[in-house]
Length: 105
Image (tube, rainbow, N blue to C red; front, side, top):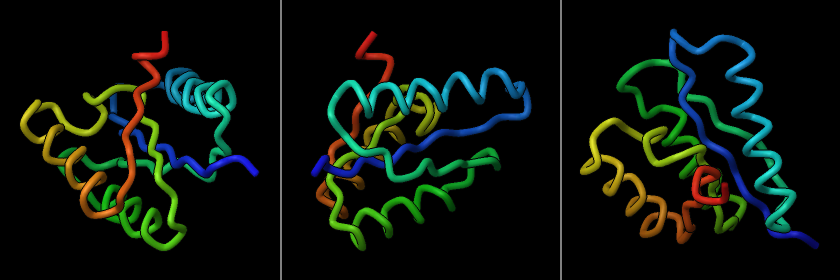
């Protein structure tokens, strides 16, 4: 059985439907190529919000999954400090690793 991986992405006002679909496809492709089963993608729609991120952490704990895929760390936050804090939260609170599709290219 393939290990679960969850996706996370921010959907901004300037993203068109095609860009959202391409980003979703990149997450799906990463999961498939790397041997994971993509359970679902968590979408953050509101700038500055971390509601979907909190749901992601909760789901990682509940499912005991250990992997998250993001298009890039910039999807977590604009600030590199906040990015690092969010990666730490995934690692420390949920025992999961964060993977970037941008690094796979």
